[in-house]
Image (cartoon, rainbow, N blue to C red; front, top):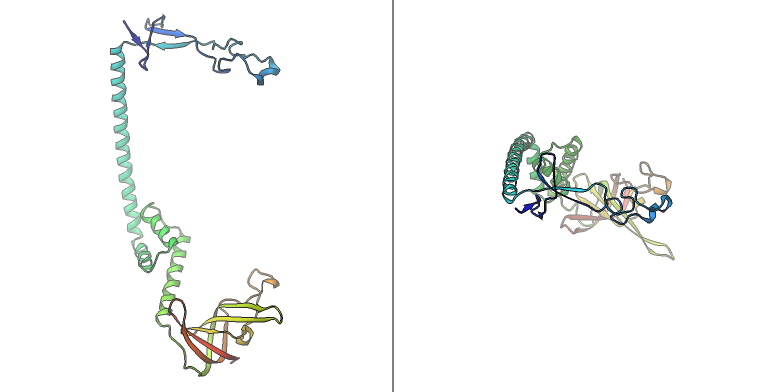
Length: 274
């Protein structure tokens, strides 16, 4: 009668266990030295492997239980049945967990639907990575937005709404050659050296007026009433023209043009503090 290991390897019975069941017992390679009997790293203690005593053969012999082909087939069938039962249990547990997650996700989305609608309305104007990530957190990850995320989302939307409202009312200001008073808020100023000797600079400064219309000037910032200031947390060497600074000047309208976005820009010249 041919006997096999559980792996299906045919082996000869050369022993029996305490219950009289067939075994195949054989030597195996020492797991500590890999059959070498010793190693250079053990030279200081005599080189020889203490587990096998230098023989390379593990002192614990390998014991393999043997089965007939029919027994192996029954064991395989039982193992498959157990595996199928475990798989079914896992599938059922996964289904229950998925239903729980779906309910939780639906509740979170329902609780935040107004917030999601506000984000969607803003995203309709153009992709904003942060807003999309917060939306995904709620709808895909089923997580509540943090207080910081809610605050930042609201700040972005309010800022963009304000900018769209400003753009809707943007227009050229005054008539060419008209001299008038402007109430201005600084957006950006740029100074560029165009000649080392003699020192010659070019200037460009951009404001918005009280109606949100863009006003630009190539006059020196100081002539526009701007002063270098130390920013919050900065030093004397960090002095600059602070964005948001307000000035009141009387100046002459010299040009009506548009920027890269097509927004009207009015250029002024010969400013004087008003």
